[in-house]
Image 1 (cartoon, helix red, strand yellow):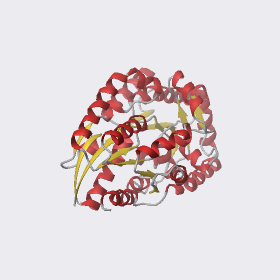
Image 2 (cartoon, rainbow, N blue to C red; image 1 turned 30 degrees about the vertical axis):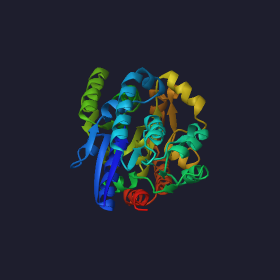
Image 3 (cartoon, rainbow, N blue to C red; image 1 turned 120 degrees about the vertical axis):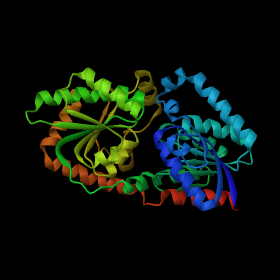
Image 4 (cartoon, rainbow, N blue to C red; image 1 turned 90 degrees about the vertical axis):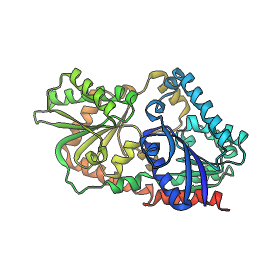
Length: 377
């Protein structure tokens, strides 16, 4: 059978998950025509009519989005026109809730025959559970990554399925056989340029503090998500005046690096789950513009921001947020864990235990099976 699917993803992780799900849908449904917006992975699939917009669309924070309101509105209107003209059987929304929830509401009004699926449930359980009935009214299927999300949407009358976390498939494929390098710290500042511009300088300041405190040489390795990010990181490193060879910046392969270093400093986001899956002892750092932080603190009703801590229901990973995200606090944490093998081993085991709750492999296949039921009834 043939099927038309309009797909929208707006971040690097969504692009990766979206591409895998597109391939699974082709296997499940046969001939599938795709159109939409995504990143390099989605756009690179054979005959997929998906445009790459992730570099421009991946913006973090309320204030940052408001500053680019005109840009987002123009693309929102263009996407809505394309969907109204094409009338796809399925609108597949991959994460990216700020854009996609508004789009779902409009598409449900103008194209009621189009089935709307959200892959990676919006984290309304963290910031506004009152929105769940509105989401239920505009969606036909919610695919959740975490098991605790399912009853929240089901109670609102929305067909919901837990398929597991797509990271499980991707990370298992990238598992390597390697022993960790003693005295090597991994720095993971995120994938977006704006995020890296806030977090990587903090990490470099931490390197300076560590070099002053410790007589034993400590090496640092980091992975840039793209060539543009790598250029920016190299510029920041040059400005820091850290001696050559202390910090190594490689292009990509952050998951491999997570399995090689002995400790990590990780920016809040998907990378924290990746590090947990590989059992890398790490601390979490988080910095955004102060207006964004104050607004988020008002909206979010959770005691932790780290996904692995939320999944565990307690603080497994130390979180350094805003003022606490400073070089002295982070260097202090690194110093304790570099010196104490027992602390590293205990955190390693706790992370593996919590990461096991992410589900089993075969996530994209299960998601494709659920979506296929909407068009094969």
